[in-house]
Image 1 (tube, one colour):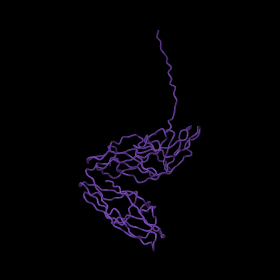
Image 2 (tube, one colour):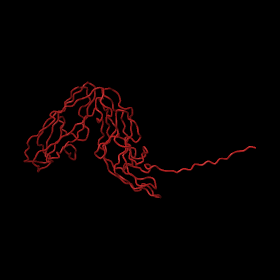
Image 3 (cartoon, rainbow, N blue to C red):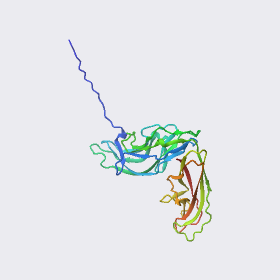
Image 4 (spheres, rainbow, N blue to C red):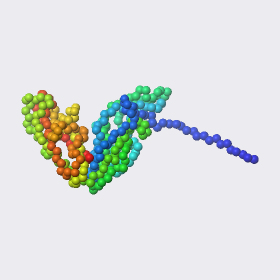
Length: 330
């Protein structure tokens, strides 16, 4: 007798959506989800630089993002800024960071690689059409990369083998769906290269004293006094590279144009740093060209510290302000 067996096999399963799968963000107005930024210039890096040195900083980005819960029956969601959402290893020499709303965060300092940005969007009830009422938020950020490895002997070659790198993504508490919510990819990481030597910077004078100032005849924008100073770069080899500069204020705020320091202890005056060659003011919080690409081992640049009135009714008393100069190899 020939017999056959008929088997009935079934699988009981429960379809669930992870928490983060209920959230979606896009750039307002354009509905852009996959965004990019590009490192256009080769950045030369002496290995003698200490860990934590900033190698590249993106100009501050101001964006408006709109987010919504996109799965019916899901509750409200907290939105997180996920760095390195693809969990890609950049190697032992370089690490990504972000300046979000004016504060710096390194990827390694964030638990789970995510930053709570303090924004919650409403859930989507069952039977509703999700996303019909998106919620939006304006924010500022700036990506940067730092040297992760300690100082060592100078060497040559690329600092990482990667060319493109997804830097961050907005998503929910449970994790990310890479590429499914607003994200930014950095192109051009292969432009970070080790340099066989380094530069030292000397500013003379490093302290500028404008002396006593008469307040009579004060007029907004009028120059009170100019004091020259120099920035000299000295190299340990004749390799061909340039230098970029980046100014940050100390004990001072900036005017709207971000080209004038305003002392916090006396806002009657402002200080602009003028390139003597073209008489243009340097901008703060924005990279500028200090030394064009050259093989010269000594490069001197002349500047003016220009003191000017910010008001026609000045306040009597002392003022103090300063600036830090960060250098980027090109």
